[in-house]
Length: 166
Image (cartoon, rainbow, N blue to C red; front, side, top):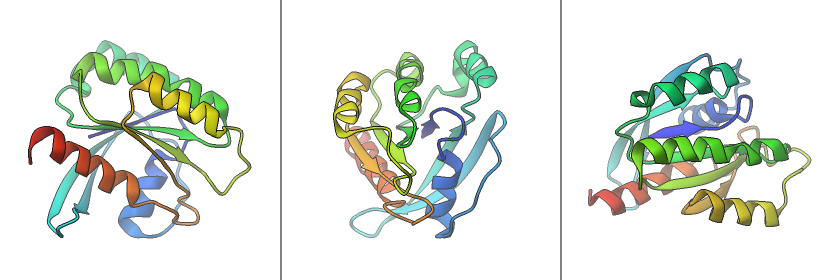
């Protein structure tokens, strides 16, 4: 599955908060980070998600756009933005377009991070983004507080299982 969004929104931090149940501050991801995450479904069956954690730095976005094979074959995508920065939500349109261009109709969820900080993004903007991006659901998280850090992964697993009949 793909995890995309601008640099500094907390993609890697969210994955680590879920996997390690601890908050870690991260340096920006350079290029692509491959992570493995075990996720249990509602019935207690364990699945292994291979997460392509893409750097949100502009210089790498051009590479992804020109080398779509880096994203091809994904079964789901998590679009991540920072609740304290409206610009990070606005820029998700480019990420969503790229994901859809390469993978067409895969499950997509929208995740707002840093719920512990002062908000710049309101409910109205989030609802508009859900529709515009074609996302199936929205989850609000805080890696620092370990708030809902499991929900994006359990939800995307559920949507992938439903879509692909797993």
